Amino acid sequence: MAKSKYSARVVCVGIYDGWDETSKKLPQIKEYTRHIIAEIDVEFGLIINIKKAKGRLIQWCIDHPSIPDEEGEVMAPFEGSEHVTDNDWTFYLGDTIWAPVDNKGGNWRMTIELDGDVIADETFDVEVDEYNVLQDDSFWLGRRRR
Image 1 (cartoon, rainbow, N blue to C red):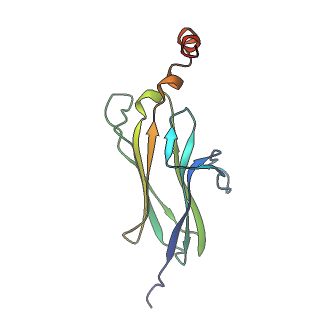
Image 2 (image 1 turned 60 degrees about the horizontal axis):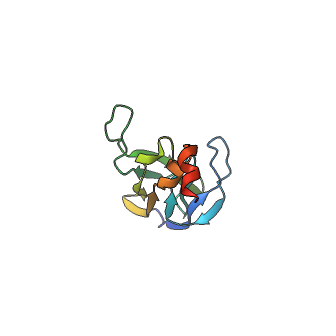
Image 3 (image 1 turned 90 degrees about the vertical axis):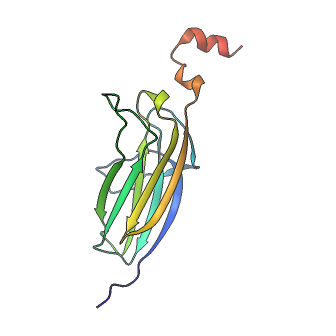
């Protein structure tokens, strides 16, 4: 018997209120956007809804823009897989900005595949705001506001 055709749709893309991997609750959208100002712990990504795919496997990928690891080598994309656990399943794929912020700028691409088909492909333009990077330096902070 052939498997029925699934359906998939991106529900929302943007900045979220945070994600708790131990909770079954999905994060809540704070702002619909693909333009992200890089700040430590800002959470961004997408929520997708997949129907009629229970038991199938999705593959996801977060491709960072040439961010170096602790040894200075470019980090490999984050990749993983998840089993669809319900016939009306909602999934969050996201990432956050970590220190140092100044090397996180660029295009972050998030993709999700099911049965070899790309069902979500979103690119986020992460902008490093030079003013925010320097905000800990009180000398310059005071000077910039004048």
